[in-house]
Image 1 (cartoon, one colour):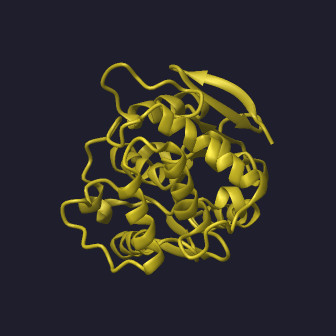
Image 2 (image 1 turned 90 degrees about the vertical axis):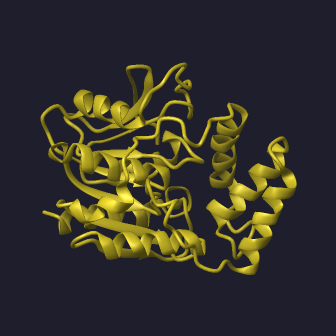
Length: 269
């Protein structure tokens, strides 16, 4: 279900419900705001999602920028003076953590869905990968940077289906996942563009607001390990595993995801 379109500083977004936003929804690095269209209407308050720079309808910036500064500008526009719940999937989860460390007074709580996190690269010891995950990694290396179609296939397998079963998700959900990611790959959005410059991994113990960490039971092993580590390092964090889904539950498990988000808000009150 499409929301009402809006723009803030060139960022294109949608809003569901009237009044100040209770939720701001941050998409994954292989997605855009459309990944929330089945989730947002099922929440218990007004919600907003927007395309970060280089994603969806928002063009990539021509100069230096921070996704975090853009997020704070969105908060000023959709929830002035009102703390909101940030719900972040993957890369969006990492951005939510950064916001909680830099501007905790703007937030009521975090719901992190298969989150990434800044600062972990130098000290992270990844777990052993499965045979399927190794096959996907080998496929990416063989494809290189120019074979977009193969990259789309492998990304959908890893992030949408989960590594154990390629093709698990079909129909409109798969079509949307591929379309969102195609725009990103064709625009060659750099992974490091808009980084916050915050060593969030080292500062998880500073988080003093309600935090729930959600991930799908079909998630890849490295992502599960990151999620478990965030739960262990974050005071009072809740751990929630969503059955029958992987890294992008907004596409194939929108109802259970929406229910888990509402439950996280209820638990954090």
